[in-house]
Amino acid sequence: MSYEEQALQYVVPASGAEESEPNIPNGFKMTEVGLLPQDWDVKSLSQLGSFKNGINKSSEDFGYGHPFLNLMDVFGVPSFKREIEHLDLVNSSKAERELFTLCSGDVLFVRSSVKPSGVGLTTLIPEDLPYVSA
Image (cartoon, rainbow, N blue to C red; front, side, top):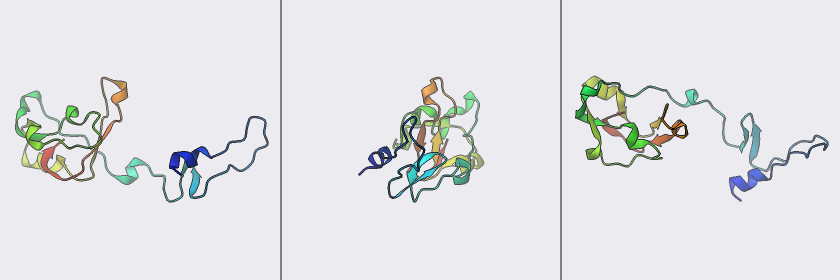
């Protein structure tokens, strides 16, 4: 039985019915965010990693230099798979490249967007991308 099917078995008393303990399927638990598998923990994002903005440069610094992953490369793409040779370029120092290099397991997310539906979209970086900045 799938997680969704098991979660649907969670029974909330009907209106006017006597309050009782919810029927929580085996292997699940009730948490502050709802029904979750027993072995999952609830954590805030700040407990799982650190946040930082991407590289910030003037428009004159783009178009030459080193590979740069921009919003259009990842917008609506769950996992980055594009060839590095096709990325845009940015003029960046060695220190900037080291600070903003993308590593396996990094998760990029859209903080603001022209389209409200774009805010919060994420992209996983599945492998190290040496000296590719974001």
